[in-house]
Image (cartoon, rainbow, N blue to C red; front, side, top):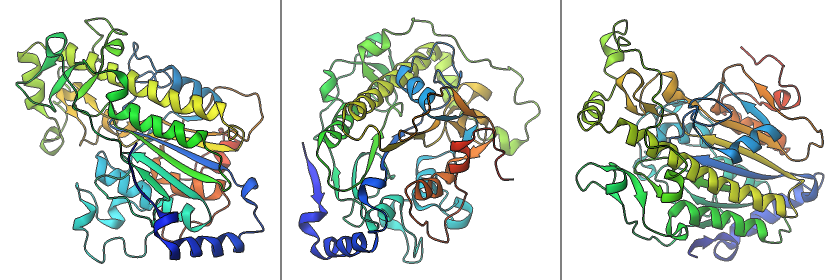
Length: 395
């Protein structure tokens, strides 16, 4: 297990600052404040059981979580790309305010970009929480003690592909849609989830913020064989209107990655691509389940808020489009669930059907934890809707 740093050991001034902050927060005891478990998935569209995006999808752990908490069935990302969505959500500012639409690496930000902004883990750490993270949380942002008490990067293993049992374009490591030959423990998402399980097994004297970033179903669509075996060789295709581009202006048609569609049709590979995507969704769900099971078995099961979301959706041939980067529902609609385990009501299946943006996560987590979000943060808190899912959302 490789840990990048532990700011409690390497940043004395930061520790003193946290101690002073904790003293100022004595009116809200650590025991009274909830822990937060943030689970992030990458490139996951509505192909989950609770959203019905694909009739064959098998995601029992997300389904179980959705029944416990509030399932936002019409949730959408701030922008359909990893970097702009994660920047928006973690800094709490819309791309049209920050200007961060493209795939910006944080090392390339100018001094004025996001000046004065504070990420969600920074907010929690500044208010007396220990913050732990692993996997893909930001997009290409190196972890710093300012955000993380501890950030874990697993030791890598090279995955061995089995293209004869799936599909691969040439020798591309990215454009592969097939099972792997490695044991489960050598896959990155397994290692990331294992870190989450380990953190939940610890004794914590302070409330914690734990972020677990699951990368699948991001390309390459590769995962252990057993998850491919969940699905038939010919999975059902999505409903596709062959004339769907006829009423779309040229700028809209340009969204479609037609070259991928042509290649998959030429190779008669669409069903293998979609099967691999579904397999990776179930593999991600398996690892989500490992973390949720660890929470349930931990002393923190009754005092933790769980938030699960994906950074954007993913096209699987609708409008001849593959991947993300389009302003269509399949690329913007995402799973989004909030479960406050402190609730003791025996109510299941609570859903919010109005349209909602992930930008609201920042203010929601701040309010639910008794923290004050910075003034610049966009969106609104969803806490009233956690208490009453039928409450109309602000216009």
